[in-house]
Length: 196
Image (cartoon, rainbow, N blue to C red; front, side, top):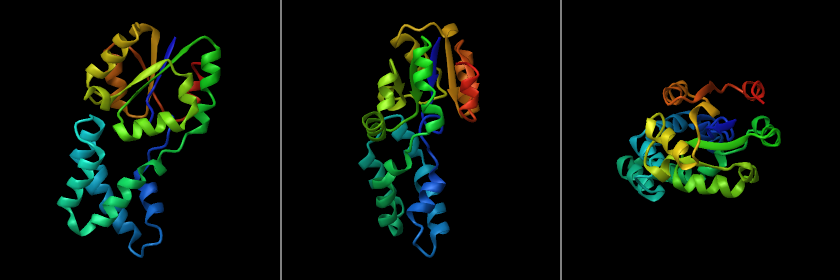
């Protein structure tokens, strides 16, 4: 069986609100700034384009600053600190060697920025267990577009019926199932254990 994992909130934390509150904890208007950064950055079309690899990290930062000049310093701080948010989820990662030693193969399929994808591959040794994977930024297509699933299957010559996909977003699971891949909505590591 081929185990395919989304990354954000499955293998590595991606919780912008918690990250922002911690980043601006010493500010008297911490909540207000955090919510504004969520709106400016994480809810923007530029964030989607970053995942699609259509703009660079610097281009996105410049666009945010031009759009919201009153928040330039905060925007630059957030964009320079994104890596701090990307902490491994140990409960899931601990299962990877067991999956591998049971004779299964590991792949990733995730919407990710170029800069951040390079960072996580470099910083997390557990990716050495993976046969490979697809980042949205490398093919200019985000989940749940069917093309990203087909790209993974074709790149590694995988049969969809021999694949199981774990993702924390329902629409991504539905899209995978339409391509013939078994999809499991990820809530915690326990839902992976059921298939190991």
